[in-house]
Image 1 (cartoon, rainbow, N blue to C red):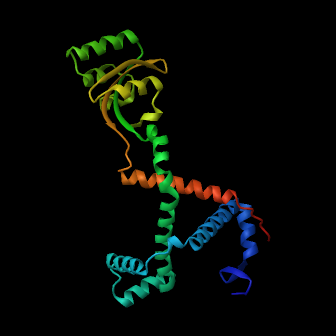
Image 2 (cartoon, one colour):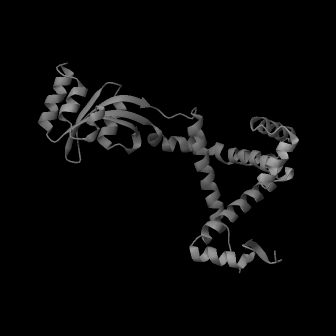
Image 3 (spheres, rainbow, N blue to C red):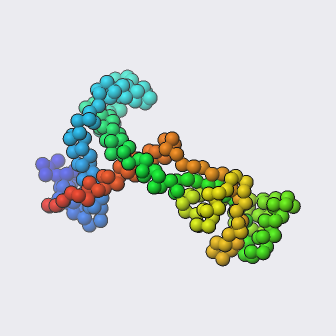
Length: 252
């Protein structure tokens, strides 16, 4: 490989300058530079914050656990695995250490803002399960609602007989919906409803709708998956702001 080549293709060297030109012509230069900036900023943050240092014992235990889980306890097998993944033990160890540091950095950045962001987004994070009966005529829907309330017919039967939407084959079940994305009138009714309650008639897009509350799932930070999602969003916003603050000049 020539000294100034970036890599080779069929023994033909490609210089770093050529690689950059290829990225420019393909429109991928922005992504390429963005990822470099991202990694540079993270690296600088990890180096500048002493509180992010990880106890070596924790790292070694994590490596042991990984090798046990992946059945890499035999030294020769582990060496082969490192080689096949283009890793040395030092780079493998550094990857684990950096992973712990990034998680600690993420917590430091996101935890002070987590509750505030959760409250702001809660209306969209809350979920409801609704069923619906939709017809074109308000008077018909009023009559159908009366039949349900007086026990003359079941909601499911009337949905299958009268509803004009395709979900009638599922008894009008709509599945999980974000409370914040519901039409205002429906959301106001949902906020006061309990499972089994009927809501409507409500006019939506020139049709008349009768909804039944099936289930309300209130978002909570005790949901670890939701908590991690919000942390990732906060962290990415922080990182994006950091990138935007940098003055970047590309010289070729």
